[in-house]
View 1 (cartoon, rainbow, N blue to C red):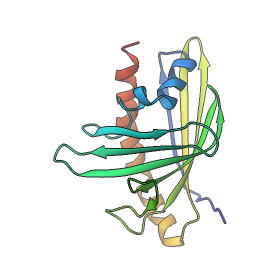
View 2 (view 1 turned 30 degrees about the vertical axis):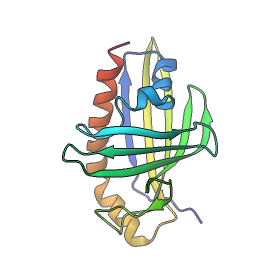
View 3 (view 1 turned 60 degrees about the vertical axis):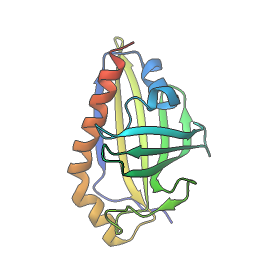
Length: 166
């Protein structure tokens, strides 16, 4: 059974780019590889199938060579408007695994990304909640919400820098 927490991550950002272009940044491997993830990490896209039931499987490598894997499982995709996905840590085969640094972290986080455009500028909004989790996992997520929002700020800064090339 899926449950939602009362404290979600909620991040909004406006880009000086049309919605179609911003949507491509989230749905095409050659773009995602250039901006997704924490600054300084090398991202490799192993699989990208942006449709309900599809996945985005990727690895991120730190400058000192440590590798970790992540996965999005797409639930809904409304071109240029919304992407609904569940993200998790994974192994290289796409199996869900526990957070290597915090085993009591939620195994799955449900995310809704919406895109809206006004006067040629696109605003994205990302909301995320843990699902199928224990009370301890939910509390850990809630306690880390501000840190996660700060981390996403860095990722979305990289998207802004990348969009400037177009």
